[in-house]
Length: 121
Image: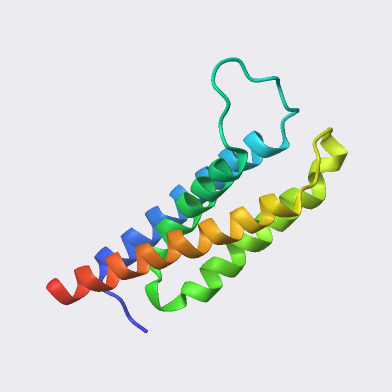
């Protein structure tokens, strides 16, 4: 499928943003945990939001390939969960569930936004 040059540029930026977010998520989830100071935050909410943000850029760039975007984000979350015990963190299935739900929501909302924007033009 041939896309206009602006679509190629948008896809390139989506990949750059997604890779930067993946690095950030990797660092945050694979660094040794530090006791928090201040009000407690919901760990699962952080996973949900992080993976929603991770899936959104590619969901916008590739709205017709949403399942591939979701699958890639969930596999990334699964890899993180597999590696965590080796860096002094705990593996939690609930984290992977939150990652998957966030990826589904982020990619779906991004897809709706992208397709709606395409119809408006």
